[in-house]
Image 1 (cartoon, rainbow, N blue to C red):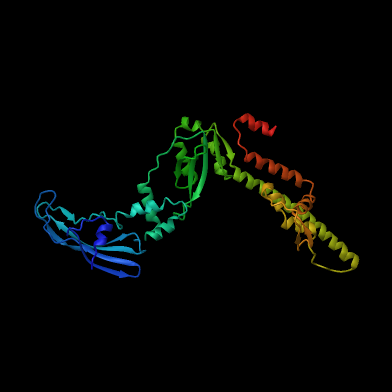
Image 2: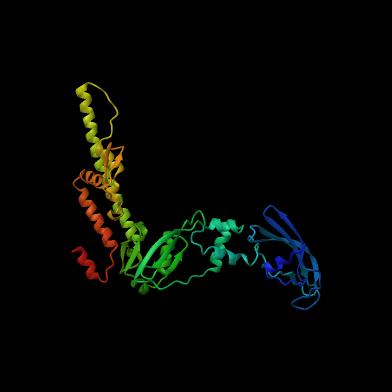
Amino acid sequence: MDHSYLFKLLNIPDDGSIIINDVEIIADTKYVYISRPSIPSYCPNCSCRMHSKGIYKRKIKHPVLQDGTCIIFIVSQRKWKCTNCSTYVNEDFPFFQRYKQSSDITPLLVLEAMKDLDRSTASIARQFNLSDTQVHDLFTAYVDLPRLTLPEFLSVDEVHIDISEKEKYALILMDFTSGEIVDILHNRWHHTIENYFFSIPYEERKHVRYIISDAYKPYLELPKHFFPNAVSILDSFHVVKYLLGLINTYINSVMKAYKDRDLKRLEKQNHDTNRDNKTIQESQEVILLRKYRWVLLKNQDNINYSDKRYYHSSLRMYADTYTIEKLFLSLDPKFNIIRDVKEKYIRFNNTHFSSEDEVMQEFA
């Protein structure tokens, strides 16, 4: 059988210096048995002829081929001994190193796969028949990202890395203005962050004026511990998330008030009719607050306003978007104020300002 494609794949000269003895296919794995021809070997130290101490076998993994199969090399490797100076030498092969269990091309393919930010460590490990730890070790061994100088606007965020049970998140430091990654910390533990920032000269840390992050408390406290001239800024996404959480809570409190009102009405009705009804049909107000809270939560620009009337079975009425909006906002006197404040922030957040004076005028 012609095995020349394997020599081309591994960039090995097909000159007889390496022999492919057999190829065995089991499921999606190809077992390739290789060896070197028996030729005299001479000591690299004293040049005396060496004697063979026997042959031992090694298993070397190679990543998947284009046809989806995996190669495992069964290598018959001689060990030589010089009887003159007692030097020991193992036969060398050009596509793997001593003590390594995978071929030399594996790290390059793994690192190429890790450029895809949507890939997890586990999926890459499965692709190349490696363990999660091996993929992690390859990354730390080959990738050296020099730290950039701390910027005036420092963005702090985390990304789920799925490398180990203990280290679930990596900490990403980024220049908010340019979008360049300043550095990556392999976890967001307190002692890791503390050791890292204290290793940076104090004068450089004084240059940082703003730290943009989410509402994670340790991030908000970074200025207090490491950056004497900086203030924390909650990024706009988390500001909106925080505002919507408050609005949702307020809507729930209004809905509870209407439910309490309806319950008192039921109790009075039971008393007047000498009955003991336990269930109560939801009132229109409760239905509006439960199903149509998008009136407050959605950005007004994203509401599909239409004067076409549709039947709303839960309300038992025909209504267009404007009617639903009017009914909802009439349920509480603060609803209009809440929406105006939220929409003002949304507009502010989507507006480009060329100076701090323009920003201050917007709040005047």
